[in-house]
Image 1 (cartoon, one colour):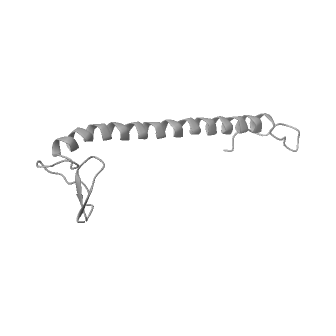
Image 2: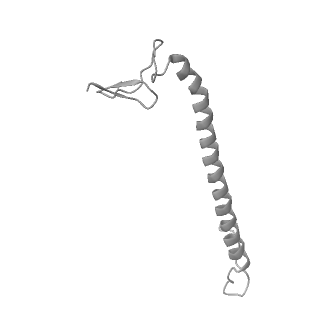
Length: 93
């Protein structure tokens, strides 16, 4: 047996080669027009993935900034005193 049937009805050779590009594409092969039609769809999907990832990262960064702000405010309100009893400066320079 030199070939087997593809579920779509096309014959697949023993090598099981992947679909090839070209204008004379048959069943199971991608034509150049089909590939050109897929490019914008793939670009939109890539953009959606990038924006979703960036949105998630920005949300996480906002939560981190909120935690750092709370820690800074607690440190500002509970700062120690100097030897004379006065509050220390809240800045370091």
